[in-house]
Length: 171
Image 1: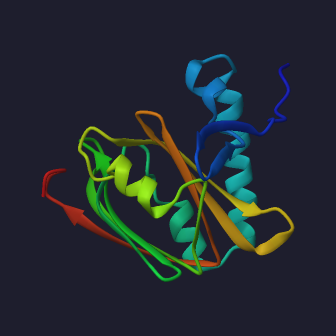
Image 2 (image 1 turned 90 degrees about the vertical axis):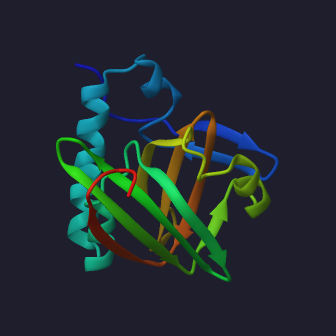
């Protein structure tokens, strides 16, 4: 049986640093690992995180951002806020507005996020993972990988998630 232990892997390097993914790294994306084992390991991690977290963190855990498209974002002081279209034809579409409080961007500067243009409709959020910041159990890190070839993370203390149904992904 293959090991479920995951090495930390660097996915993206910018002038501001690196983003290191624990589960959904380049090896996962390429299919070079048993993806079912990785997904099972991540789900197990989320179950443990869920049991130890506040309602607001639980709301984030239950918000599927795969293939999300960013509609707008801001970084004002220590609050990173963005609105994304999430969902699909089967589950329906929602606008998720997420605010990360006491937030710090990791591996990118605000200028690099602007240059990448998160709101470009060709840029999809391919994968994300949530974890506790090592050595700081009251802080979390949310890592994001976008198509094409852009990744960053947000470290934060708390989060607010608002989800609203949409008639279509274009609304």
